[in-house]
Amino acid sequence: MATQHSRSAARLMIAPAVFVLLVWMLIPLCMTLYFSFADYRPMRATFEPWIGFDNYVSFVTSSSFTNSVITTLQMVGGILCITIAGGIALALLLDQPIFGQGVVRILVIAPFFVMPTVSALVWKNMFFNVDNGLFSYLYKALGLQPYDFLSQAPVFSIVVIVAWQWLPFATLILLTAVQSLSSEQLEAAEMDGAPGWARFWYIILPHLSRAITVVILIQTIFLLSVFAEIFVTTNGAFGTRTLTYLVYQRVLESQNIGLGSAGGIIAVILANIVAIFLMRIVGKNLDN
Amino acid sequence: MGRITLENVQKRFGEVEVIPPLNLTIEDGEFVVFVGPSGCGKSTLLRLIAGLEDVSGGEIRIDGRPATDLPPAKRGLAMVFQSYALYPHMSVRKNIAFPLKMAGMDQAEQDRRIAKAAEALNLTDYLDRRPGQLSGGQRQRVAIGRAIVREPAAFLFDEPLSNLDAALRVGMRMEISELHTTLATTMIYVTHDQVEAMTMADKIVVLRAGNIEQVGTPLDLYREPRNVFVAGFIGSPKMNLLEGEHARAHGCKTIGIRPEHLDVVDSGGTFTGKIGVAEHLGSDTFFHVHIPGMAEPMTVRASGEVGLRHGDPIHLAPQADKIHRFDDKGLRIS
Ligand SMILES: Nc1ncnc2c1ncn2[C@@H]1O[C@H](COP(=O)(O)OP(=O)(O)OP(=O)(O)O)[C@@H](O)[C@H]1O
Ligand SMILES: [Mg+2]
Image (cartoon, rainbow over all chains, first blue to last red; front, side, top):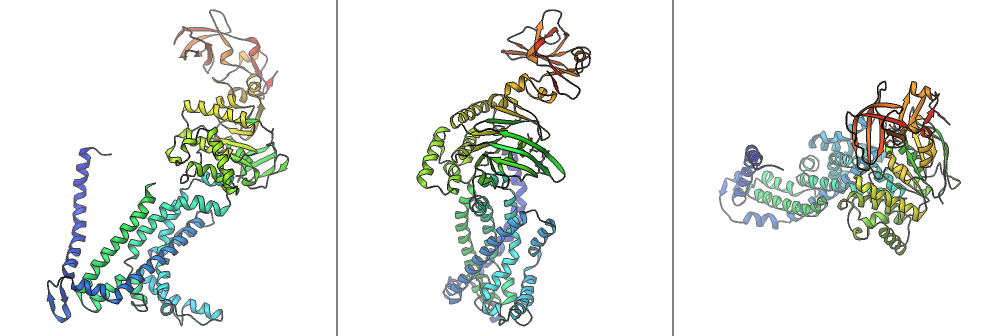
């Protein structure tokens, strides 16, 4: 689209931003890389700048590593399922002309503006609390034994909290996609004798595939680094220790910066593998 | 079979009455064209017949059976939309197969019908493409293919050719006419292009603000427009409508003279004026003539090449038996 001239001008003008971004990302990354090859434990005043791959080996071989990877995948997968399914349902509902549409839409989007720590605390104390939580009251009202969500079903509980936060995002993107579907296509399908479910399955869902792809991609990237919700609710106990949380524990609780940095680098590599993997599947979808 | 009857069919959007109670019968196998100016309710009427809009009153019958409350799929009609409304993520084959699949038809019968439709519409080579990889004309044919495989009682077309260029439009016009001859199925066709209306229709329905102004064969409408509106709407270039002294001379409120019924004479004639714009098309020549005492220029159609140009004086003589006369209410006086 551009001439030679405007292209070089564009490069020049982008340069400062790229520079800042590089510094912002590269310096921490380089330092992490540097520490990951060192035995650095400030509490014990140990600092040996080069110990090879020892940190990596011990991080990967510890049993908590495999568990944390599995937990991470479970969480991300669970959250994606709920947000996509819920997002589609909400988007279809919000697309209907209803009374007070504007207000309803704002309400639906609201959770996205609540800070993760706050929403986790609200869920923990208001809903999941065994003694005073709303769910406990509900169980009691139904004559059932109150259920301690955070210790009995901890991963599920965190999935619910995070999914609640990300549902607005998915809904918003999917709603714009639903609205861009031409009504003539649906009418044509109606004339072709397609009942409601068939119109959803053959017309609406394929139309949404691109938006769903985008939601999956963006959410995965953010969900891999979920932290506050775990910190606030279970503190990593009951098998809710994700990779991010494991790295945090290694660095701050065990005060082993070398080991934590190695974990961080491994997490970056794994995240990139996931990203490439997703891009591959999803990129095909975006092409046509 | 596809005999469609509208009895006092009426449509309101909130307070706005788009279609006042209207009666119309469309015979089996007829090619009916709805024409009228933009916003007169042509699409709305078609969508009422299709069942995509609910009527506010009245009764629709298809083959004598009441269809007013039937959902679109149950009416046995097929519709071709202006924007084609193809399913973009399905191949041409799947697009055409969609209504059959929804009807639960077995695969062999589906394949047979698709092959037949593809052959009839010259789509055989494109069956595995996506709609996005087709030209406008091909997309239009896919949309028609999707309609004909169902073997509906009637076809509904809503300005199907308006997105095509002029040359393609002429081609598709003939294809649709041919299709009508082969299938002999009722077709209802909405357009605001009166050339399409005149060339394709068995019966034209002229609408204005939801009212039917006249129903008749193209030549009926051309020869005997029922009122001033139809007279001005049918025929191209438009009929010259004159009021005042010229009309009084014929004992009526308005007279209408078609451009092709004005002869260019060397001297004398009823009207004398100066040529404003001259359009030389080769086969015909159109003159827009400014006549003293008349607000609008008069349009004249002379066949062949005529050696007159801008600024030349011209004498015009209307063919006496081709003058249309209208009364105070705009109705034809015969
Ligand atoms: N859903 C609707 N709500 C309110 N008014 C509508 C609606 N659909 C159509 N109308 C009105 O009904 C009238 C007829 O519309 P319609 O689409 O039938 O016109 P048309 O004859 O098809 O025009 P065109 O040649 O421009 O397609 C218009 O005045 C339009 O504004
Ligand atoms: Mg229309």
